[in-house]
Image 1 (cartoon, rainbow, N blue to C red):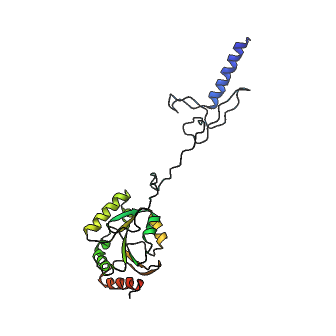
Image 2 (tube, rainbow, N blue to C red):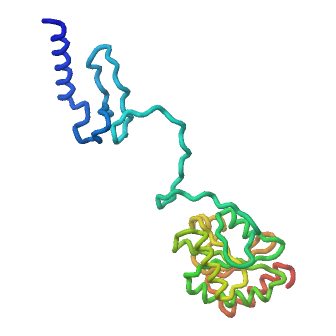
Image 3 (tube, rainbow, N blue to C red):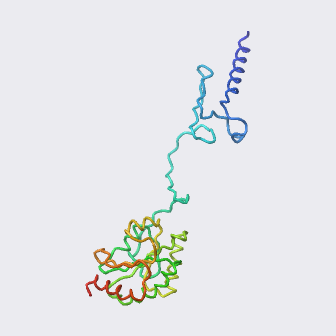
Length: 246
């Protein structure tokens, strides 16, 4: 048999074996413009000495041989909701806002809650919490009673039930606080609720709740629940005692 015919017959037999064993993708398994490539299964060396393509990496849905390695791009961490995680918020400006509201991360929250030589009254609240809003006039009255010896700060949980842009939400919380006459500032925590509970060692995961923190960082008084009229004097008294003015 002439050599060209022998080569042709061998090639036809190899093609028959390949088609029988289904070693390549079927029509329609990839876009027509993409070249056919071996699947993830091991391709037999059907022609001795032939140069075979590199096997496809397992899990490559398109079945395309991997391209030459390129420098790895920085990984993007994902939040629980699947979106790209925001950049870490940079803490700037004063530790505590005098009025209005600013969004803070965990480091910013800890910084805001660090006493600066005076007792600090911390009220955990949210604008969507009716009991929190109801107690605000009494907190404002207490703040006025200790303005020279203590500080007040709200910690807003608004993002816990109404997620969204932290800075935009902080602006709305600040505007709401100003509209109801709150004369002290708030910080809006933009992390996960569990982070806040753990970092501050809160024994309640409900709002409203209020603590008096002495200059040494010790919690000397707290109320889990609404500050009512009978709580205003004990709150003021606790601030005075923490300031050494009792």
